[in-house]
Amino acid sequence: MCLRNYTRWFLLCISLSLGIAASAETPIVVKVVVVAMYEQGADTGDAPGEFQFWVEREHLDKILAFPAGYHDLRMNDKGVLGILTGVGTAKATASIMALGLDSRFDLTHAYWVVAGIAGGNPANVSLGSAVWAHWVVDGDLAHEIDAREIPPDWPTGYVPLRKSTPYEQPMNASLGQVYELNMSLVEWAFQLTKDIPLPDNATMREMRSRFNQPVAKKPPFVFVGDDMCASTFWHGVRMDAWANAWVSYYTEGKGNFAVTGMEDTGTLQSLKFLAQAGKVDWNRILVLRTVSNYDQPPPGVSPWDNLAAEKAGKYSAFQPALESAYAVGHVVVDKLVEDWAHTRNQVP
Image 1 (cartoon, rainbow, N blue to C red):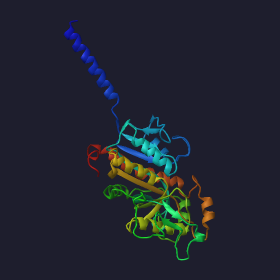
Image 2: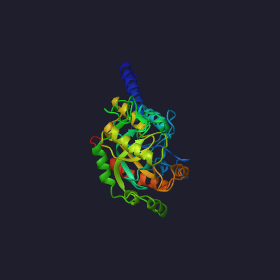
Image 3: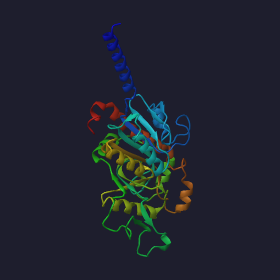
Image 4: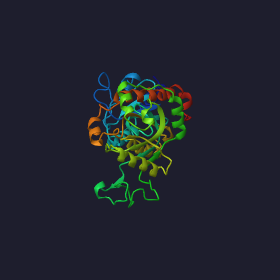
């Protein structure tokens, strides 16, 4: 072989090897990230938590090791990636940030669908209902004085961080106490799912009958409301009144408290930072919470007795709420994937 031909052959080999290396390192394009928080056991085949229906029914069969997060990732061949963050704000924050910085994935056009169960405000929702959130408010960042020691004219011992009295004006949310999601996308998701029939049963109907609020008595339905998140599992009529006022305060009267979750402000804080870094698109986030229990007891039952009966996995509508989260959420996920030629570059 002459020197010229050898040189050409050598350069071709180098070029091909570099091309193969570049191809191997090309990030996986993710179309939708499904975010679940709680799972009871295995991902498949046993009593379900928030993740299992997604894994089984969306065929998230490919397991991707995720040592920087709470749980291994799952993906299907259509571009849907599932993450289980673990329970609590801290685990959710860390897991979502770890995913956002994982070089294996291209998340720049991905949609995020957070789907989990929640407590429900009986003034606005009923058991098994599905709520698309517009506002998500943090219920942890605050000062607190024991209710037995507060001034007699205070409605609560919770005081906004860096304030001196409850609901002191002007409101300041600069520390990340409130997140507003893209209402156009929320409305699109609602219109797509508002007529989906949701699971109901005799146990749920009996529980609903105990409440005086007209909405609480209704069969499950799809709703646009707002989500108040806290790592403390609070319960009771007075705490519900605080949550309503807290959401109203931080949204300046625009929010309508419907559900109480736990992890969503942690998830959104990470996504906010990742959006600032150009890793994700803030306008492509949806939060769906389904009502597994009311956030207060029915009349005649003490909050402590009711709380003792409402344990994880034993909520009044635990299984139906899991079904509702998938029944509503997957319609949106599947539509985003089906219309990817359009939704990749244009948010619905």
